[in-house]
Image (cartoon, rainbow, N blue to C red):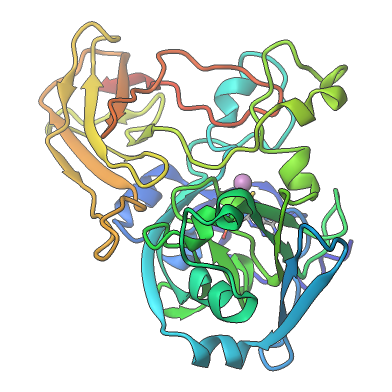
Amino acid sequence: LDYSHDPTRDLPSFIVHAQTPFNAEPRLPLLVNAGQITPTDIFFKRNHGPIPDIRLESHKVYIGLQHPDSSPRLDWAELSMYDIMSRWPKVTVTASLQCAGNRRDGLAALKEVKGVIWGAGTISNATWSGVRLADVLRDIAGIPTDLSHDMVRDFHVSFEADDQVHEDACYGSSIPLRKAMDPVGDVILAYEMNGKPLTRDHGFPLRAIVPGYIGARSVKFLQKIIVQPEESLAFYQRRDYKILPPWVNSSNVESSWDSAASLNEMNVQCVICTPLENEMISSSAPVTIKGYAIAGGGKGIYRVEISIDGGSTWEPVDRMEQHPDRKSGMFWAWALWEKSVPRIRPSSEIIARAYDSSGNMQPETPIWNHRGVMNNAWFRVKNVTQL
Ligand code: MTE
Ligand code: MO
């Protein structure tokens, strides 16, 4: 694959795990200090191949409907980017994207895992503008808007990208049709990020934004959208992004994929972004602990707690900011939180944990799985010293 046409990036902001494909996460203090909306240039970047060089004027998006009875009949419609931008109302959704591999380093520390060894910065939050996928599917493919309709209940929307990747013909993934048609699901086809046209790294000219789901479902460089009876057959739907049982390893993984469910909604997550491990903090001021928390499926963060004594005692954070979507009321965006403690002992371990609005709490210890996905164990920052 040819990476010579990849865009240039603001490298000092990132911990770069790979150049080809470009996989990089922003440094944690930078991420949290940038505020509620992550500027596009420091937003994490996760790719499986080169960034395609697509022309806005000539790009075509194909919408297909695979009928269950008359298979393999497939009806197609072709839309230009102009069609997409002019035919449906423009909506804006603020949503965080988090890679299912965020914090994979914590699982790799237990036992070998397959994948990019991400730290805890594989998440960012942006405003996304575009059209509602439900509007497009209703008008172009005739999909009923009634969520209890058999087809809406059972079918899937498959997304295929206009890129080249290592594991498959192109990047692809799918979501349940019910999520796509749900008026409070807020799935959009986005052509803007933070008020500007999408950058090439983040999916120019069009990407899916699937709020509340793992980042892998928000397919970039979108070219085909197919409503079909089954999940996408793409590698990234069938052979990746699943929590395999603990006895599965590289020797028996091939026979295990089909029995595991594809991940969709994120789990409850909380990370300390500052201070960092081994950090020395001045003694003249209190220690300010800052981080993010998020739950899956639009649930809110109910409580974030901090321990500075290795988990014996916990206190809630002082401040937490999380905004529900103005229209749907769903919590698609992360919560940023802050706590100030006057004094910590030398070589302290600081721990954070969050509860979501359903009462789910992060597990105390990490749960290993072969692909190293969905690590949401209590977040520990070791050996912090106040001078
Ligand atoms: N879409 C395409 N076409 N190619 C990709 O490699 N990576 C996916 C998803 N969509 C990917 C893609 C994964 S795994 C994640 S976590 C998000 O995009 C990352 O989005 P970002 O690079 O805009 O942060
Ligand atoms: Mo991802």
